[in-house]
Length: 192
Ligand code: URA
Image (cartoon, rainbow, N blue to C red; front, side, top):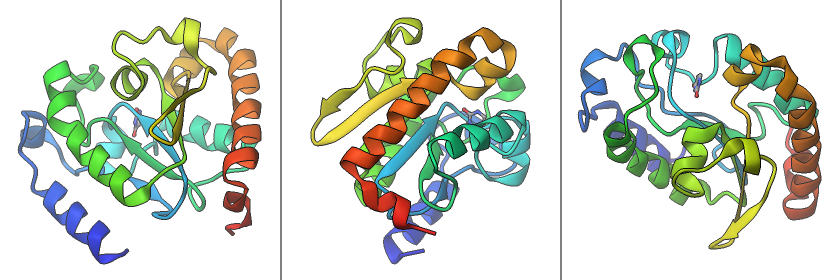
């Protein structure tokens, strides 16, 4: 890990900017290649992530890994983080004030990573990173270009575990993401 990443993680580990800092077991900073131009952003850690300190290690994480493999990606060549870095108790959605308190850490990560593509996993990440009140049912798979970065959203893997009917359209979104990676940052596929 480069010095900047190390000091950012160390600062984040001590964070008490919101109530979630009081109940976390482990802070879930992020995982993956710290030079990757492709960033996936979920909403916040669940129980397994809170215990292990790594994003997407529970059931949703297994599905996310399968989704990444459709895009020819994996934890070795993209970066994965969340809007909030500590687990909301009982797997509730992170509150707006918790999202606001925490998202600065994600912006710091993005400053270091300088992603070219940002894929929001679910409505909450898209509402923060693309547009407030984002309607994922209408807008998943659409691309927005802002400040040199391409943003899109797909259904959150937890939603896809609950609702199988969303999977065919997500498969098409994933194929489109693969095309976009090839177009915008094909070097990603050179990483082993
Ligand atoms: N869901 C998320 O949004 N993030 C995780 O890290 C795990 C589950």
